[in-house]
Image (cartoon, rainbow, N blue to C red):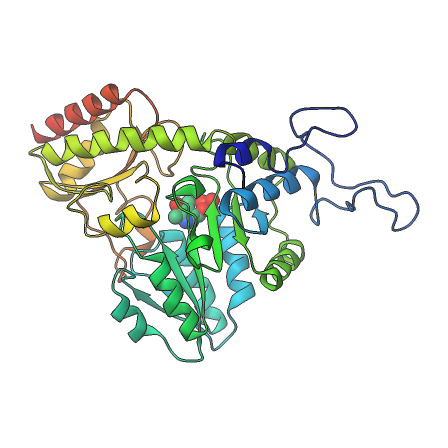
Length: 383
Ligand SMILES: *Cc1c(COP(=O)(O)O)cnc(C)c1O
């Protein structure tokens, strides 16, 4: 198999056969001329069903995750919704992480339960708790995030795959935080990988998208059927931007990881910080598992600020380079307060996050500037 960056730059991206265009064109068309009824040129008839720019993205994502099939969507949530439609039915049960992404929790808790599907939130770092939550014959899906959002918890993907297999359930790994450069769950036994391509794969905070990748031919067929039948597809411009972002994923992830390691070190030493959550730190409870299944530890760092909620909000308001915003995975550094922003939808539930928590998406700017910005924000928040 070719190396990661070679795949990122070339998979699904042969020069255009008619013009030689080195870059995959943006096929901004809703429909395709047919040479006689049913005589499509290359299988394309209508852009909800298939579009060449989207095909290029899907082939590239499949190659990056080492799966035979990738199916792209208009958002990560559309990918999640489609996967749930394909895998659970009324009366079924699924397990979700106890600190699942807020949008995933909302989809399961507010939408899916209305269709008679039950769920149990579990700390997936605790395999005994997972086994206890399985309802034999009814649990059809184990939903994993690792690292988790926003608490940076780590789950052992290979161990979860064993539990899923013996329970007759599928294992999906939301690989948004790691990206396929740092971690490839299919190789560890997962059945499906989910991405919000809005984040690291797109990488430039300029497009929303999602994808599912699998090596399971039958599941892929169902996913493709639903992609067309439900219709939450990315437009050709979105597919093109995502594909452009993916080309530089490896170099960006190296730099995100370099910068996050140094930021985590500075925070660990800062008196206003109570605790730093970063799987690259030796004291992180998931450090060994993360080191086993990830190439490096990525760009997401969370920390608890001494002084509680008010102090955390002051830190978020005091940075000058880190922009106060939701989302993550872009080249620019972002800071946010999960309790009131990305994870407001889990307030009051079992998934509520500490209110002194601050989450960073450490970008690829010069790390000295980032460290200095956080230091001044912490100092300002203390006074
Ligand atoms: C953002 C995100 C999603 C949802 O993706 P959208 O593209 O915003 O719909 C799902 N999982 C994780 C871990 C995310 O960060």
